[in-house]
Length: 136
Image 1 (spheres, rainbow, N blue to C red):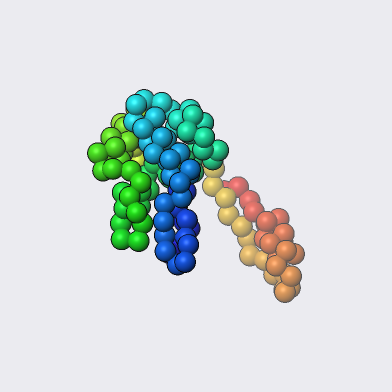
Image 2 (spheres, rainbow, N blue to C red):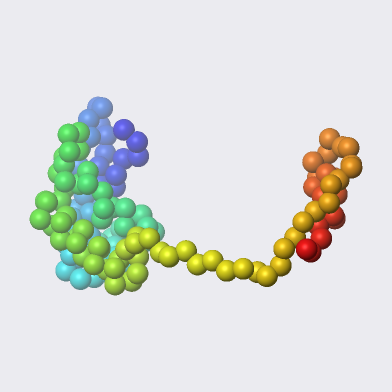
């Protein structure tokens, strides 16, 4: 099953909603949907986790209820949060759009001469190769 999402607990082999943490998850979703930052919403909800961990909570579809996981957040609220996170990501340039690769030439070329050193010591061999590097 993997790592148990915050707000759930396992008892007698069954996943159930863990009262207080689940209430904090609901509050987090509401506060973020109302416009608070992730950090401020988490602090206000009483969730002491890293920014990325809170972001993972806000994107975890298990809170909608799927098979083994009971529902903590309704679909309309989850969708509002998803759309807001998507919009904020675009505003901040984090929209995962493929960035153009920038390439440039250093202007120098290097080569190395063959190494006649016979050794099983990889460190000595690397050092010997490095010492033969020349600018072309």
